[in-house]
Length: 66
Image 1 (cartoon, helix red, strand yellow):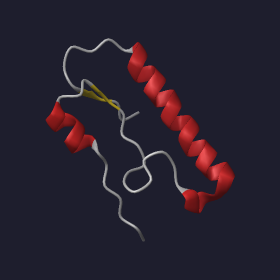
Image 2 (spheres, rainbow, N blue to C red; image 1 turned 180 degrees about the vertical axis):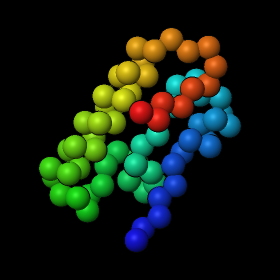
Image 3 (spheres, rainbow, N blue to C red; image 1 turned 45 degrees about the vertical axis):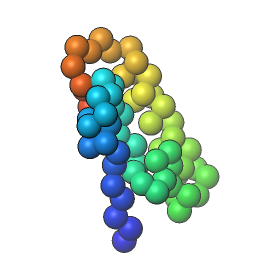
Image 4 (cartoon, rainbow, N blue to C red; image 1 turned 90 degrees about the horizontal axis):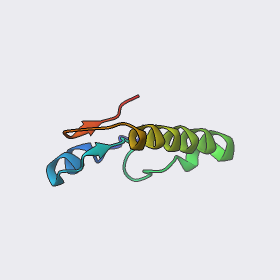
């Protein structure tokens, strides 16, 4: 099992106001081990979550978990 780390702590440290956790390091935008269909599903979910984050008004740092 490969353990991956998210970049949320780094994003919080540098002051990002909208933080969308991804799959993690080393594959922040997908997982090549899942094959094309599984990887596409992860990428689509990430893009949809990011779009919701952009449409949400925030005053402070916000981590968009779901």
